[in-house]
Every structure is written in structure tokens, then in C-alpha cells.
Length: 156
Image (cartoon, rainbow, N blue to C red; front, top):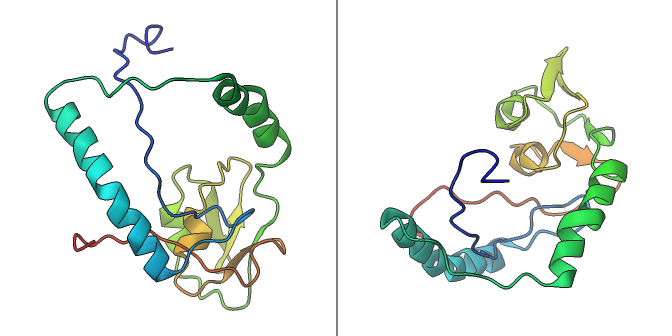
């Protein structure tokens, strides 16, 4: 795909970060999240250094399971599960518009002070995990689950 677009493939690097996909999983608590991010920092620093030097990232072995996950399993998951239909705002919503600003696909708009989701959702969870009042839910699946937002400070 990179060749088709006229790009030079530089590789991939696995970076384990805290879970934020609360439509299916639980996000870790603050202490566990910080430990995960702290452990990821050297990997990110290594990647940054390689990129700065114009070098490729270390080669990684892609197995049959990896190909299945990124191929038919991923396609089926997006076709049948990744939809915005189940997102809604509870009465705790203040109409602040954070979700509108956070959505990378511009898929959310405010209607009478409440968020309304369109059809172009990638399930990034930016809206639900970043809501300052935790007013956004994904059906019953997110009810009572902690939200995770990567800290913006440099002190990790």
C-alpha cells in the first residue's frame, strides 16, 4: 500500500498502552495506567530516535494469526460491530461540546445541547473517555466502567 501511495514503508512498532475501548473491555485504574504508560515510554523514545535518524523501525515477524486479525477478523468486526448507534448522552451531559471537538472524524454534532452521532464512527472512544462529566455511554456496555484518557503531562 505504501508503494501505491508513493511512500517508503518504515515499519511498525508495538507499543502497549492502557485499554480505552470500553465498549468491550475495562479501562485500568489511574495507578495501573501510569505504570503501563511509564513502561511504554522507552519504546516510544526508541521509535522517536530511529525516526529522527531516518532509520527503519526494527523488523517484526508477522504470523498467520496477525494476518487473520488484521484481515478477515478486522473486516468483520468493523462491518458488524463498529457503529455509532449505541452512543448516547445521559442527563449528566452539560452540552460542553468536548465530544464534538474530540471526534477525529467530525461525526458528532450538538442538537439542543446534546451530542448526536452520525454514521462515520471508528470507535476511537475519544468522546466517551474524554467526557468531563462521564455523561456518554455506549449502550449498556460502558455503564459503570472507568474511562481512560492518556495524560497530557510530561511527568509520567
